[in-house]
Image 1 (spheres, rainbow, N blue to C red):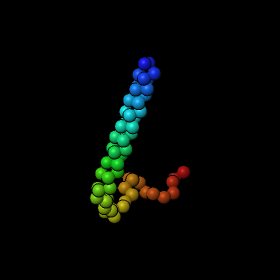
Image 2: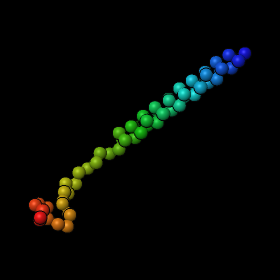
Image 3: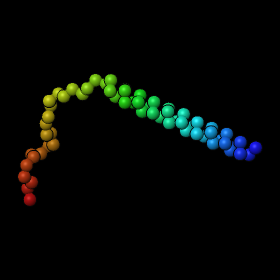
Image 4: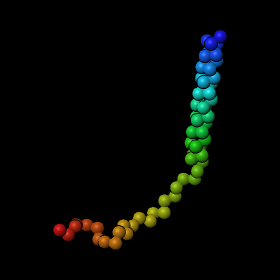
Length: 60
């Protein structure tokens, strides 16, 4: 009788782990699909070195 309950408990644990794994995979796939449908980043070609000082050789 005790063996049956241990077997039942192990089966429920295994079933819950499989369910959790399936849920986690579906969440990950949802995140991937959500990122895939986002519009691509557009480049504005606005490159500047606004550092407040000259860029070059340092004064020693």
